[in-house]
Image (tube, rainbow, N blue to C red; front, side):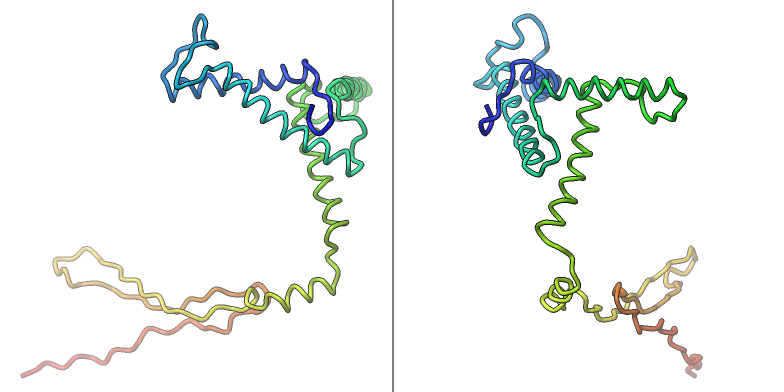
Length: 211
Protein backbone atom coordinates (compact mmCIF):
# COMPACT_ATOMS: atom_id res chain seq x y z
CA UNK A 1 0.00 0.00 0.00
CA UNK A 2 0.97 3.65 -0.55
CA UNK A 3 -0.76 6.12 1.78
CA UNK A 4 -3.56 3.60 2.39
CA UNK A 5 -3.97 3.11 -1.37
CA UNK A 6 -3.86 -0.52 -2.42
CA UNK A 7 -1.32 -1.61 -5.04
CA UNK A 8 -2.23 -4.79 -6.87
CA UNK A 9 0.25 -7.48 -7.90
CA UNK A 10 -0.55 -6.78 -11.56
CA UNK A 11 0.26 -3.08 -11.14
CA UNK A 12 3.56 -3.88 -9.41
CA UNK A 13 4.50 -6.32 -12.18
CA UNK A 14 3.65 -3.74 -14.86
CA UNK A 15 5.95 -1.11 -13.36
CA UNK A 16 8.64 -3.72 -12.79
CA UNK A 17 8.64 -4.56 -16.49
CA UNK A 18 9.28 -0.88 -17.24
CA UNK A 19 12.30 -0.82 -14.90
CA UNK A 20 13.80 -4.14 -16.07
CA UNK A 21 15.77 -2.83 -19.09
CA UNK A 22 17.24 0.01 -17.05
CA UNK A 23 18.54 -2.37 -14.39
CA UNK A 24 20.14 -4.63 -17.01
CA UNK A 25 21.87 -1.61 -18.56
CA UNK A 26 22.98 -0.39 -15.12
CA UNK A 27 24.68 -3.67 -14.21
CA UNK A 28 26.27 -3.88 -17.65
CA UNK A 29 27.83 -0.42 -17.34
CA UNK A 30 28.80 -0.60 -13.66
CA UNK A 31 29.81 -4.26 -13.35
CA UNK A 32 30.06 -5.53 -16.96
CA UNK A 33 27.50 -8.19 -16.08
CA UNK A 34 26.12 -10.02 -19.11
CA UNK A 35 22.55 -11.27 -19.19
CA UNK A 36 22.32 -15.05 -18.89
CA UNK A 37 21.18 -17.95 -16.71
CA UNK A 38 20.67 -17.05 -13.03
CA UNK A 39 21.26 -13.42 -13.99
CA UNK A 40 18.85 -11.89 -11.47
CA UNK A 41 20.28 -13.82 -8.50
CA UNK A 42 23.98 -13.13 -9.13
CA UNK A 43 25.63 -11.14 -6.32
CA UNK A 44 27.58 -8.22 -7.75
CA UNK A 45 28.77 -5.20 -5.78
CA UNK A 46 27.02 -6.37 -2.64
CA UNK A 47 23.61 -6.75 -4.29
CA UNK A 48 21.73 -8.62 -7.00
CA UNK A 49 19.94 -7.34 -10.09
CA UNK A 50 16.69 -8.70 -8.63
CA UNK A 51 17.08 -6.69 -5.41
CA UNK A 52 17.89 -3.52 -7.33
CA UNK A 53 14.94 -4.09 -9.66
CA UNK A 54 12.56 -4.50 -6.75
CA UNK A 55 13.93 -1.42 -5.00
CA UNK A 56 13.63 0.79 -8.08
CA UNK A 57 10.13 -0.53 -8.80
CA UNK A 58 8.97 0.33 -5.29
CA UNK A 59 10.46 3.84 -5.57
CA UNK A 60 8.88 4.42 -8.98
CA UNK A 61 5.50 3.04 -7.95
CA UNK A 62 5.47 5.09 -4.75
CA UNK A 63 6.16 8.32 -6.66
CA UNK A 64 3.48 7.50 -9.25
CA UNK A 65 0.88 6.60 -6.63
CA UNK A 66 1.54 9.77 -4.60
CA UNK A 67 0.96 11.83 -7.74
CA UNK A 68 -2.25 9.91 -8.45
CA UNK A 69 -3.46 10.62 -4.91
CA UNK A 70 -2.91 14.33 -5.53
CA UNK A 71 -4.97 14.14 -8.72
CA UNK A 72 -7.72 12.44 -6.75
CA UNK A 73 -7.63 15.05 -3.96
CA UNK A 74 -7.94 17.81 -6.56
CA UNK A 75 -11.06 16.13 -7.94
CA UNK A 76 -9.50 15.32 -11.31
CA UNK A 77 -10.03 11.55 -10.99
CA UNK A 78 -12.26 9.42 -8.81
CA UNK A 79 -10.69 5.98 -8.98
CA UNK A 80 -6.89 5.47 -9.08
CA UNK A 81 -6.87 1.68 -8.92
CA UNK A 82 -4.96 -0.18 -11.63
CA UNK A 83 -8.14 -2.03 -12.61
CA UNK A 84 -9.89 1.30 -13.16
CA UNK A 85 -6.98 2.45 -15.34
CA UNK A 86 -7.37 -0.64 -17.55
CA UNK A 87 -11.09 -0.01 -17.88
CA UNK A 88 -10.42 3.59 -18.90
CA UNK A 89 -7.93 2.38 -21.49
CA UNK A 90 -10.50 0.04 -23.06
CA UNK A 91 -13.13 2.78 -23.11
CA UNK A 92 -10.65 5.20 -24.66
CA UNK A 93 -9.68 2.79 -27.43
CA UNK A 94 -13.30 1.84 -28.09
CA UNK A 95 -14.28 5.50 -28.51
CA UNK A 96 -11.37 6.10 -30.91
CA UNK A 97 -12.31 3.08 -33.01
CA UNK A 98 -15.93 4.24 -33.14
CA UNK A 99 -14.86 7.75 -34.18
CA UNK A 100 -12.67 6.36 -36.96
CA UNK A 101 -15.54 4.17 -38.14
CA UNK A 102 -17.74 7.25 -38.44
CA UNK A 103 -15.13 9.00 -40.56
CA UNK A 104 -14.03 11.43 -37.87
CA UNK A 105 -10.42 12.62 -37.58
CA UNK A 106 -8.49 10.58 -35.00
CA UNK A 107 -5.07 11.92 -34.06
CA UNK A 108 -2.29 9.55 -33.06
CA UNK A 109 -2.49 5.76 -33.08
CA UNK A 110 -5.93 4.23 -33.49
CA UNK A 111 -5.38 1.99 -30.49
CA UNK A 112 -3.20 3.04 -27.52
CA UNK A 113 -1.05 0.60 -25.60
CA UNK A 114 -1.06 0.67 -21.79
CA UNK A 115 2.19 2.63 -21.73
CA UNK A 116 1.01 5.13 -24.35
CA UNK A 117 -2.30 5.72 -22.60
CA UNK A 118 -0.61 6.03 -19.19
CA UNK A 119 1.75 8.72 -20.48
CA UNK A 120 -1.07 10.56 -22.29
CA UNK A 121 -3.33 10.43 -19.25
CA UNK A 122 -0.64 11.53 -16.81
CA UNK A 123 0.40 14.49 -18.97
CA UNK A 124 -3.23 15.63 -19.22
CA UNK A 125 -3.81 15.32 -15.48
CA UNK A 126 -0.58 17.14 -14.68
CA UNK A 127 -1.59 20.10 -16.84
CA UNK A 128 -5.02 20.20 -15.20
CA UNK A 129 -3.46 19.97 -11.73
CA UNK A 130 -1.09 22.87 -12.39
CA UNK A 131 -3.96 25.02 -13.66
CA UNK A 132 -6.17 24.19 -10.70
CA UNK A 133 -3.42 24.78 -8.14
CA UNK A 134 -2.61 28.13 -9.76
CA UNK A 135 -6.24 29.19 -9.42
CA UNK A 136 -6.68 28.07 -5.84
CA UNK A 137 -3.26 28.62 -4.27
CA UNK A 138 -2.14 31.93 -5.82
CA UNK A 139 -4.41 34.12 -7.91
CA UNK A 140 -2.64 36.53 -10.27
CA UNK A 141 -4.72 39.58 -9.34
CA UNK A 142 -3.63 43.16 -10.06
CA UNK A 143 -2.98 43.67 -6.35
CA UNK A 144 -0.76 40.57 -6.14
CA UNK A 145 1.17 41.58 -9.25
CA UNK A 146 1.76 45.10 -7.89
CA UNK A 147 2.91 43.68 -4.56
CA UNK A 148 5.31 41.32 -6.34
CA UNK A 149 6.73 44.25 -8.33
CA UNK A 150 7.18 46.38 -5.19
CA UNK A 151 8.97 43.51 -3.43
CA UNK A 152 11.22 42.71 -6.40
CA UNK A 153 12.02 46.04 -8.05
CA UNK A 154 15.60 44.94 -8.71
CA UNK A 155 14.34 42.27 -11.10
CA UNK A 156 12.78 44.93 -13.33
CA UNK A 157 15.71 47.36 -13.36
CA UNK A 158 17.60 47.69 -16.64
CA UNK A 159 21.31 46.93 -16.18
CA UNK A 160 23.96 49.52 -16.93
CA UNK A 161 25.47 49.80 -20.39
CA UNK A 162 28.82 48.16 -21.09
CA UNK A 163 31.37 48.51 -23.87
CA UNK A 164 32.62 45.53 -25.83
CA UNK A 165 35.72 45.63 -28.04
CA UNK A 166 36.23 43.06 -30.77
CA UNK A 167 39.50 42.71 -32.66
CA UNK A 168 39.35 41.04 -36.08
CA UNK A 169 42.72 39.94 -37.45
CA UNK A 170 42.98 39.91 -41.23
CA UNK A 171 45.49 37.67 -43.05
CA UNK A 172 48.43 39.92 -43.87
CA UNK A 173 52.19 39.92 -44.12
CA UNK A 174 52.19 42.48 -41.37
CA UNK A 175 51.15 40.76 -38.10
CA UNK A 176 50.15 44.12 -36.65
CA UNK A 177 47.47 44.71 -39.30
CA UNK A 178 44.07 44.42 -37.65
CA UNK A 179 40.74 46.12 -37.78
CA UNK A 180 38.91 47.10 -34.67
CA UNK A 181 35.25 47.67 -34.16
CA UNK A 182 33.91 49.10 -30.94
CA UNK A 183 30.32 49.49 -29.96
CA UNK A 184 28.15 49.75 -26.87
CA UNK A 185 25.86 46.90 -25.86
CA UNK A 186 23.18 46.71 -23.24
CA UNK A 187 20.52 44.27 -22.17
CA UNK A 188 17.12 45.82 -22.65
CA UNK A 189 14.51 45.40 -19.96
CA UNK A 190 11.28 43.73 -21.08
CA UNK A 191 9.38 46.61 -19.47
CA UNK A 192 11.35 49.67 -20.45
CA UNK A 193 13.27 50.27 -23.74
CA UNK A 194 16.96 50.86 -23.48
CA UNK A 195 18.16 54.42 -23.95
CA UNK A 196 21.68 53.39 -24.85
CA UNK A 197 22.75 54.28 -28.37
CA UNK A 198 25.59 52.68 -30.33
CA UNK A 199 28.90 54.54 -30.00
CA UNK A 200 30.59 55.61 -33.16
CA UNK A 201 34.16 54.45 -33.72
CA UNK A 202 36.67 57.13 -32.61
CA UNK A 203 38.00 59.33 -35.38
CA UNK A 204 41.76 59.10 -35.60
CA UNK A 205 43.74 62.05 -36.87
CA UNK A 206 46.20 61.25 -39.67
CA UNK A 207 49.68 60.56 -38.38
CA UNK A 208 52.44 62.95 -39.38
CA UNK A 209 55.81 61.79 -40.54
CA UNK A 210 58.61 62.57 -38.11
CA UNK A 211 61.60 64.07 -39.78
